[in-house]
Image (cartoon, rainbow, N blue to C red; front, side, top):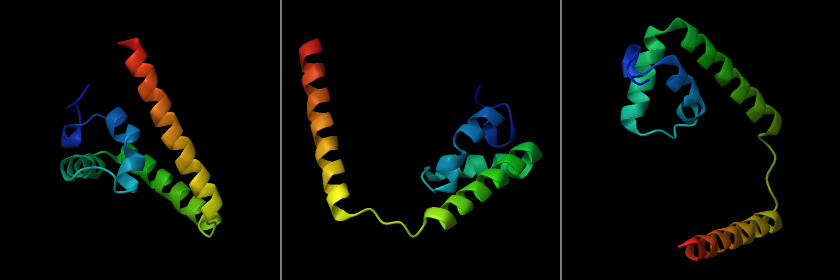
Length: 94
């Protein structure tokens, strides 16, 4: 599906990555291609604007919330456990 629109991306690809673009979590080349697509595609630009508005609204509504250190520690422990458990499953599968 790649390559059917402005920036060498089709609308589906752009809209699938719009939050990564908004959060500046894409590499430079993908970012440039998305920007080029948005510059040449009014429907995607309109959708991008809606997604940007949603992100701003969520940030405004929840931006002051900070997770307590105890919660962060519990999450880190569970992620480490899940990683270890997944490693054991992969080892057993081989």
